[in-house]
Image (cartoon, rainbow, N blue to C red):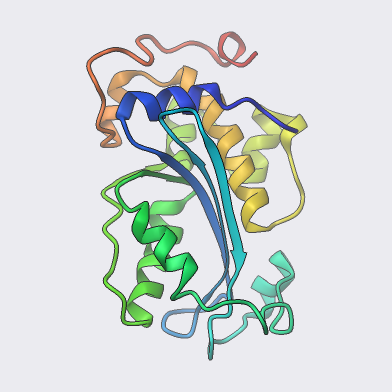
Length: 213
């Protein structure tokens, strides 16, 4: 399902910085034996440009948890000739560090893993000062529960994808963000630490039936 992410583009314009909607896939297990295998991001800029960046990654000598491999299907063989994290991927992250980073359960999972991967390769750790966990936002403003696919199936079922890969999940995260933004007040956004301008993106919360067209 292709969508026109006009609400997220409006948010990027309002906060005066790009919105990076992203997801990662990793090898499973605990640090430092867990490595990032895939990174995918959609960049929505205040000038309304939309860009995409995705890559498989070779994490080096890490453990591959069988459960994680069954979920995303990325094997050692699949990433054998992939580039290392410390290169194009880490440079992309560093370049966009001051953007608004939007993920699903990203504050608890993805952001710490990206910071850990920078540290594992001896790189300066990015701060990610502006971030929005759309899982928490969807729970707070729309009453949705469960994982990303469960929320999408409840809110925008035509956008659901079974594939569990970084760019697919980034696309579904963007769909979920588009769904919840009209339900979100300025106070909700400020609570999540977004640097808002004075003009209103949303002023009164609407019901889901009113918002998603």
